[in-house]
Image 1 (tube, rainbow, N blue to C red):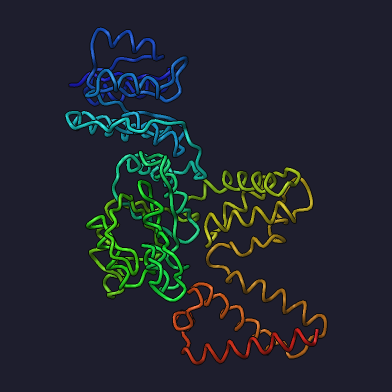
Image 2 (cartoon, helix red, strand yellow):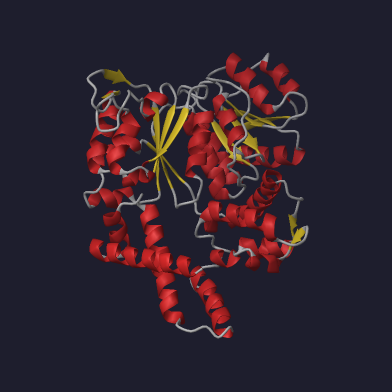
Length: 471
């Protein structure tokens, strides 16, 4: 039997929580404010305290900070209806043993209490690097996002490498920035590099820098991203696309904390926390020999998996409102708001491009929607069909059908050849852009031979040139 204190100004929450804990065999004392807890702590110290973030007078985080300073071995579980990254991370930073997002299941609460009591003899998380509360662009109230926020809060204070996984557009860089801002490295640089956007022959220099004369065009010494991020955080996006030879160099830096610039002889020490992200299955790439297993283990010390938007539909209305308001402010447009029918329709869409696709749709709506209220029918005019639920036709098919209908209604001829030409051009340009102009990789993605891609590319350019001249 353990003595547990519950601190919450909501009598109903205190009652149900205390009842559940008593049923689990604990002795429970209830408090409605921080001052009452302070007075009681002068007389005795419980074995566990469960405290709300929002309290009358002194808030729960301030009480947590005071309690942790005076009684560092007393575990404190923080509970709150505010599940943003900053609040969660602040709780762990101030020494919380655990974080319960409201509303919580009573079984979850009693399990968390038992876990905290069991681990009470372990070292408590430090209250390092306290600073001003930082707002983050990560939003969400759904259960999957609450779990992400809890992970960020737990992981940020450590200095371990983190692998962030999730589909394209889920916000992996936002997670990386949140981890940096809530860490002890927050006053040092945050440097981001998309490894898929840099040609393979330049990526080594981008990462490690180069000496003057190291290669043609290297006129002076240039520092790389590791040097630029010294003391801070280096975020490597799309790590799955890194060439194998460069993976070996990265592994050496992670293992030994030192490297040479390209063409250099000076050994440079590195104090950088590395966060990596990918939308690919690294385990599958390792099995195919496309990614080093030892590098993956170095990067995947801790992992945060971001859910796709279709698995957190409850967050879509919140995100849509935020993005619409932000677009109006950024573009200096009149404020608009969503009709309930429009929000309901958005929440049913799959958004294969995830949060990024929703944000782009809201930006278009801010510009093209005719009235102050965005209606259900305005969504299609802004291209919402591209976010259609799975099981319907592919997004581009609807656009193609609309184009074909319009052309045929106008008496167009030779429609098939024109459509094929446009399709080839779009696919070629998209594949080349995705692979930074590397034709062999682009051809592989399209299922074409390199010579076929080159021939199609030439034909596409000749057709465009002819069209421009005719215009």
